Image 1 (cartoon, one colour):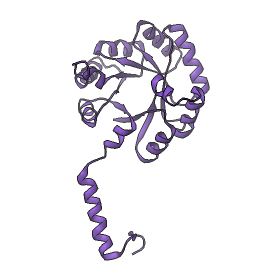
Image 2 (cartoon, helix red, strand yellow):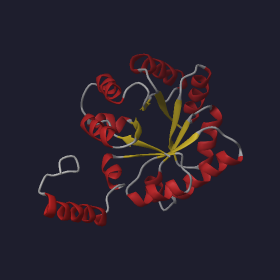
Image 3 (cartoon, one colour):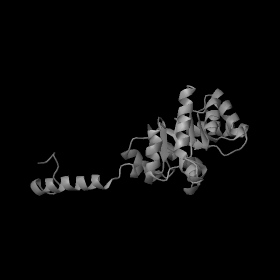
Image 4 (cartoon, helix red, strand yellow):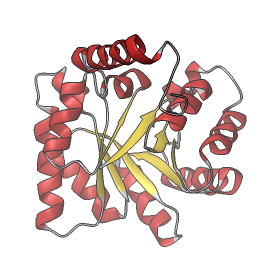
Length: 225
């Protein structure tokens, strides 16, 4: 399963990309706007941090297919690398996915709430589909169940698109999405941090260090004893 980072904050991207097996970065208009800086400059800086081979997902803004296509071409030219254009699953967005597929530009279908929206986008040529887990939970639906149904639909119909589950509030949602076969998840830095957090892990490490230092001295490691 692929783990992606859902942020446009440069310092967080640097930190997490250094520490964790991050397969890519996802952004959306809200995440970009929070940084209050040059749109294109920010994306180019992200690209410089993660390199050209790492996935970067950037959303087009227009609601018209032809303009979405122009946005996609512009972003592809300006940012380059392993780029995916995020497109909402509205009718004009589906049309844009078809057009971009024919031109060899990769797309990620976003704002997905139903399995049929995901299937339509995949059939239109989207490489990834991004169902919103927590937002579904917030309206008394079951986000993880929707993820699982999309995974099963793709399996049954041999659809090559991958499920990129998004919108997580806690680690339990990530865990359940992973269990039901999501090919990838994207989550905020705080959720990614919590994937490793467990009190007994920290206390065990503290105990190991305390026992070691009691014999070999503070600050000593296996290299210098």
